Length: 474
Image (cartoon, rainbow, N blue to C red; front, side):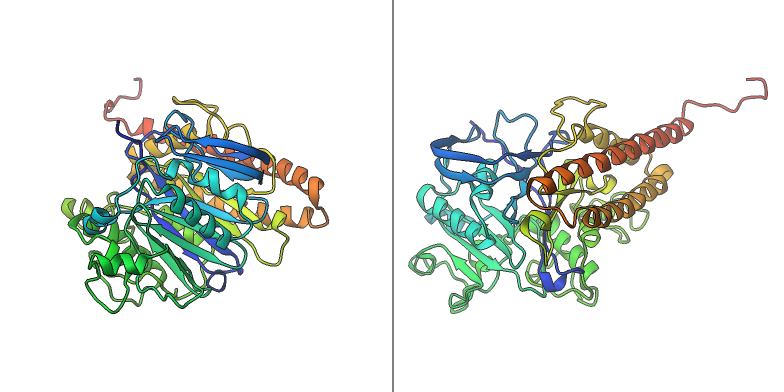
């Protein structure tokens, strides 16, 4: 049986001193092999587990869960027959997690430590980790303990953040992995390759699987001793990397660190970077919505030619199912700090909608479980907008761009106003107020979405090739 996997995604991590307001930020697109694999956005309630078995519908991975599971936001599949794939969320302790970015290890390391067929996989990661952790480091430790006991079914990369720290963990083989804390003043962008480079085993900013150095030495896997470069030892250096993966990192670093002289196919781009400015939610969302604008590689652009426009895989795709920016804000209690910015379908044409993570319910349109196109589902409405926009891009790009700009302004106004209105609240009273505020704002977003779809339909109808010049009476 062939297991379902989500073999794509682009990840962004930003330390607190590198961000505009001191927030930690982790973000990612969730891509699929298919254009339409609908998602929903929901809040998973807290639950106390009594030594109960969680079993994955994807590969049979099973884990006994015990103790209190915190409430958290999530973006699961609508059709969960092949696994939950909850993907991203923020829990009530103020910890954010995004799982996962598909990663690939080379055949040399996998020959000596193959993946475990019924081990921990992407579909289960968020579900068995996020409810049970109160810091990002605890997330690293919990994943490490599960992999040590059960193995990993996939090479995957996981993003974790709390108000103080941002961590990136790369599961390479069945049992070996490395995690690195992103420096507070830095950012990182990753794209389906092992990204972590030189490992400092003496530093508290790294965590590794037990015995990884001995494993590498025993099997003579290190091409550049005595340096322990995780990417060089465990990663891939292929033509697919040069065209499918690396150009996305190049474009991100081109935007955030423009003075760096780099090429799209450079397979040794730095993992850790400093930006030329402080980065905000909009900068990260803009990157996740991009398709190499302003270059000859833009599939929707006018620069370059047919060859260059199809040369590299863009960040935002037709098969992107959702994007998210998980923001943990400073100087706030955990119940107030987290905002889950969610964008359904093709992020190039969909707004990132802020959701206060302490709320207990989501707007029905975002939680709608339609497996086929439905006017009541935010996912399917945004999928429709993306399809219509791409089909008449030159005609309606400005209309959709203006819509997205207005959505960003409204989103920031909403966050600031809601912070002000709920400043004196806490506990259940705060949760109730944030739930109501989220619902009202999502109502407004839904109305704006209906309007822009109407505008695009009208413009496209006027652009039909099934037309003819008519006289004044026809």
